[in-house]
Amino acid sequence: MKRRFIVRTSTLALATAAIVLTSCSTPQTRISEHPDLYQSLSNRDQTLANQGQIRIGMSRTPVWLAWGSPDRKIVGNMGGGPTETWIYTYYASYPYYPSYAPWDIYFGAPLYDPFCYSWFPQSIPYPGKLVTFANGRVASFQYVTPP
Image (tube, rainbow, N blue to C red; front, top):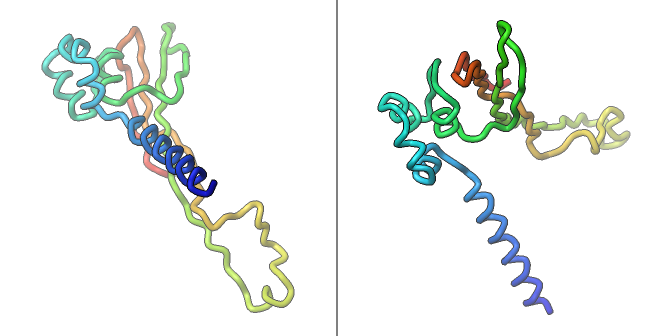
């Protein structure tokens, strides 16, 4: 019975690790999986996509090859024409270290909330990269520094 539990747990852990490791996509993996899309690009866009970079005037295809699928898309309007903004979410970790005063040992920490704080680093999402398309071409892009 115990061995069966260990085998099932190990199988679940290996499957989870495989999913996590294969879900990480790079420009090289996207290019190798879609060589036809890559070959349809200009030499300049091929070089940039290989390096994970984009430029003003690029179409959606080389941006996708360089940066991957966005986490969110926002449809809008700029200058009387439709736009689409792709947002790529990143995460910043901030550890929380509670401080203990000598009186906390005897009286407890009156302002400490164990459900609010954790010993594990807090992960805060932020928009790491943004690219806006107008008429199917890159009109602007931004890199956001972590908070």
